[in-house]
Image (cartoon, rainbow over all chains, first blue to last red; front, side, top):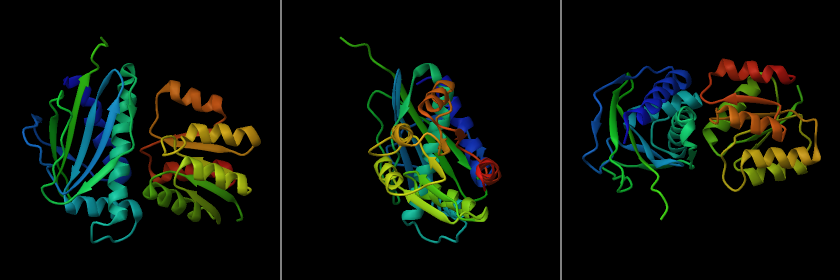
Length: 156
Length: 120
């Protein structure tokens, strides 16, 4: 996992939250992932493939997920429902898609996002990647971005 | 104003955001599609003044949707609304027949400005 691979995701996350939600994020220290449990209650997951491959996970606290969906839909949403799940999936899609564009030489494709909800759910990365974890705070609650990518193995 | 618009995106959130902007601009003949196959089916069954489509969708990509629409209709404006920002992808979309391109993420103002160029 190279630092140059995560920077586009960090930029894309901040840009997406500011552009779409008007929400500024404060980033904490990056660290290596040491736990399969997702950091927060609502996780958007998206696969990437190409010359490098792996996964990105955007894990939002309940309060942030509700506020993000409420803002995007201009409605007061008070429970994790299909609208919130779709909104988190779309945010994950936008963050990964914009990062992918900045990783042009690696000819990446992204999959369709999945969303998992519930406290203490687990998200496992492929075994050949060591994800980097970027924790964030916002006025609406915390979130975590996790990115794990590895170079494509040469064919035998 | 009676403007028939087809909106294709697998995200219901994105469709709602686009619909909201279209309604605020006075459009009232709105049809939504949640995947590429639905989009093509709706297009063939109706008459549209504008098509807005995502690129990455289940069953059929937005690029394939554009190609199928253009096989029958050379004139309807088609705006691709997508995260695909690489120059090569934009060129690919334009060569397929896309009229205009909007890269996610975008603000509501940017979306309205883009839509305003197409009779809204």
